[in-house]
Amino acid sequence: MTEVRIQAVRDPESRAYSAAYLAEAFERERGKAVRFRRPLSLVFLAIDGGGFPPETVRDHRAPETLACMVEELRKTFRGSDFIARFAHDRFCVVLPETDRFGSVLAIRRLRKTVREMEIFRFPGRKLDLDPVFAPATWPLEGESFADLYRSAENKLLRRRESPLHRLRLEGKTFWEACRLLASGADVSPAQGRSGRFSLHRRAYLRLVEAIAQDVCAIGDSRAIVIAAGPRPEIFKQICLSFNPGGPERCAIRIVGRSCETPPDDGNMTHFYIDDEALEENEFLLYRRENGAYGIFAAVQGEEVRGFHSADEWLVDAMTEKLQETYPSLGTH
Image (cartoon, rainbow, N blue to C red; front, side):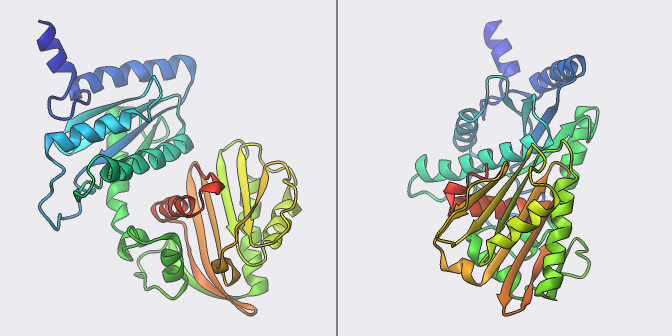
């Protein structure tokens, strides 16, 4: 009887929890969230790449690889988190006490864990293990598990239209991707959330001011802003001109090559990074609970040319690439 019960709770291949356990546990966690008025988020893993056609025979479906993935992911969990497999190529991580912004940060940890797993667990062996992660938060994106799953699947479908996928930026470094975006990368006109720009410096700074105004108007929402370029003090002045303290839950990071790093101002932190790429390139990454925005620009005298986007897939990926390039930023 005990063995039968274990098999019902665990998926025999991956050793994640089973679909039956997930259904029961989700209702239990949702009940707690209702009772105590606490957030609840799910992160869905699409092992097939979110609907993208496989280009090679996929090795990652082997039970050994899936079990290793689940084992490594569990090491990042808190005591209340768990992972379950509810379809052949779909997993779900349940994150109690986690809001939408927290689920975005959790995805960064999970994705990093999978990448490192391939490096350290399977040295010299190339695995085609590249799960796509999509978050869904209760009750903002659905009341039932089916609603949340539908919301996550819609996000995975929208990923196909993201500049991240269209320009094949996934495997590029931060500066490779940044230069490609700022250099005139062609994005379909149907991609209304993204576009190229060529502005005089003053007009460009007005665009940055509009973002700073939005940052100061987010209220109690969690958010992070990272601004960098050859003249980072301008970003600081713009942010301070609207609200010196800024929203308590918003972290603002100003990055530049200035030899003198000024003292921090409330939630604004300054970083000195000696990288020549910051002499002619600027970027701004803005992520909050219900949206994202990114600017990637090349400075040519008084003209600023580049690419801007409200695509969450792109902004999240570029933020992760940035943190990998400069770990001292601590963007997680």
